Image (cartoon, rainbow, N blue to C red; front, side, top):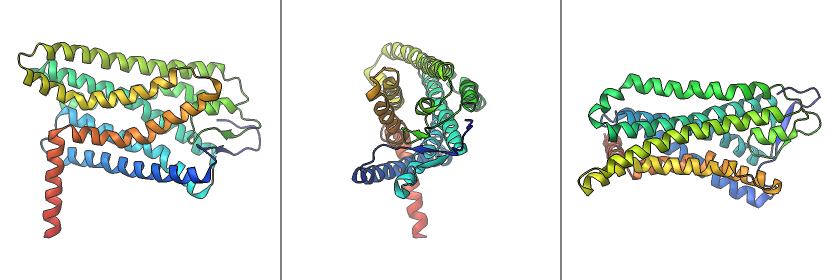
Amino acid sequence: MRNHTSLTSFILLGLTDDAELQILIFIFLLITYMLSVTGNLTIIILTLMDSHLKTAMYFFLQNFSFLEISFTSACIPRFLYSISTRDRTITYNACACQLFFTDLLGVTEFFLLATMSYDRYVAICKPLHYMTIMNHRVCKRLIFCCWITTLLIIFPPLILGLELDFCDSNAIDHFVCDANPILKISCSDTWFIEQMVIACSVLVFIMTLVCVVLSYMYIIRTILRFPSAQQRTKAFSTCSSHIIVVSITYGSCIFVYIKPSAKDEMAINKGVSILTTSISPMLNPFIYALRNKQVKQAFNDLVKRIILLSKN
């Protein structure tokens, strides 16, 4: 983001100017951030240590937890610092870095969720070939493709964004450096980059959603052919956690594509941002842990191991 004036930083306006409400927001975000990091870190440790959690599904879950920790850490600590110190300024370089990492990590999550739906498709529709198709080399390549595809998509608008000029206003109506409010305060012609951001967002959303929907169409068709109700219930239970996480992720993003009035647009944008950067990363580990017997068993084994070590 280029600057032809004496401006050297942005001001993040945050969520509210109400001092009492800021205290409540600080406490809420601090608790959700700590739970998010603790929960996702626990998932990573379990998948690394437990021999029963070495399949492709848990490898993808491990990577998803890493993304969740990184994504929430790119947004929330800076905002907590801003509330606690009342210092709302952020330098151009810091803002550009935050925008890059939030876009990179957020978009990669969508591709990873699509990859995880494909994994569930192979596990249920092609169970005899699952270990062959979803071997460790293939899993690593799929993860690599998620990151590379994301970089190829987000780089063009980000490069153009670095060429934007800022004249008088440097106040960003958000609690993070987000593309939409940054474009609003630029004195450059932003029409082309706005269209590119929309095109990239829709491309990612549609591509990944189609993959998820197609995977689950085949999964449901296969499950309904199972002879016993017990088999159908067991098969559905292996997908339930992923379906809930997908529903929360895509459901929250639908609000971004619904065109609100100008007055409500930024309020909705901030609300969705709180959901995706704070609440979702906190909920996801609990969704996977509470609905997965293997994860719960691995957690119980880890707790027993820690208790035994502490006694010794």
